[in-house]
Length: 93
Image (cartoon, rainbow, N blue to C red; front, side):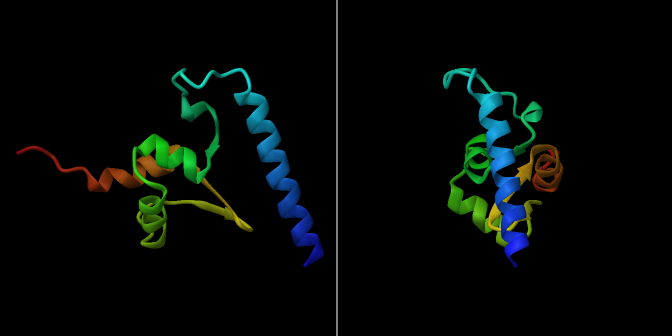
């Protein structure tokens, strides 16, 4: 149990430190290319999809979008999420 806590804490620290290293030079007003940023957090994914975090959680519960869970840490791969959302596309007649 202690080893798992250490590993999950290390992975979370490693991800966040590399994420903030990449993001420190990006201004808030700039458009971010999320495909090059790797995994996204709940807040980032909700902002990217223009939905609330609650709606995102509902979609996760209903297994409508794929996500990665490491301990309590939840991350999304944008490419996989966009592929999964293609089934909600309604084609014009």
